[in-house]
Image: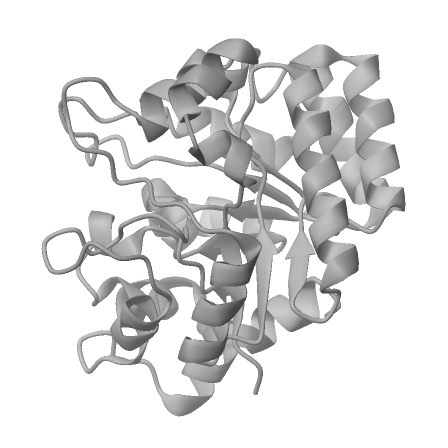
Length: 297
C-alpha cells in the first residue's frame, strides 16, 4: 500500500533565504510572523525539492501533497501555485499539490483557482479565514466551496483547537461553530479539516450532526505538537479510520524536544506506535489508501 503524506508545505530558496524580507516585500505579515516569530525560536523548517525527495525516499513515502499557505494576497497565491505546478510537472509521480487561493479576492480568486486546477492541481487550500479575511459563511468563501464541489476536488481548511493555543503561538483562535455551519451549508463540498479538525470529530458523535459529515475528512498534520499518540485510536473510534489522512506538516519541526532536523520518519513512527493502536488494516487506510481514493491518485 502506498504511503501518501496529505499535508506538507514547500517554498523555493528565495523564500527561506530571508523569509522576513520576502514576506515584507510581498505584504504577507502573517506568514512572516508564523515562520520567523520575533524573540522566540521558530518551529518552521525549510527544504528544497531535492531534500524533500531524499527525505521521502529515506522514510518510504511514495507521494506528498503540497498545500498552499493562507496568503493575505491573491497575487501571492498565484505565485505559490506557479511553484507547485512546476514541481508537480517535474515529479508527477511523487509531488501533488492543492491550489492556494484567497476567497476574499472575489471573482479574481475564482478565475485563478480555475486556472490552477486546469494546470493539474488537485485540491484547494490550506485556507484560514482568520488570517485571510472574510468569514466561512460569506458569499466569497461560499463561491470557492461551490467551485471546488463542481470541479470534484476537496478543500483543506486550517483548524486550531481553541484550547491548544499557547502564548506567543502564531495560531489564531478558531471558533468551531462557523466550521459546523459551513459543513451544514455545503453538503456537496468535500472538506479536509487539518490538524485533526481542532476537536470537531467529537461533534460527529451527536446523532443530529453525524449524518452531515459524510464528506468531511481530517488530517493529522502537526499531531505531535497537539495531541498524544492515542488521538489516532480515539478519532478512529469516533468516526472510523476511513476519513483520516496522514499528514506531517513537513518541514515543520514536529518533534522539537528530541530533534532539530525535519523528517517524515518520526511522524510515521508515531502513527505506527503501540500508543496509536491502529490495526494493520486501519493503518493502511490512514497512511495512504484514503488519500489515494479521495484524491484519485
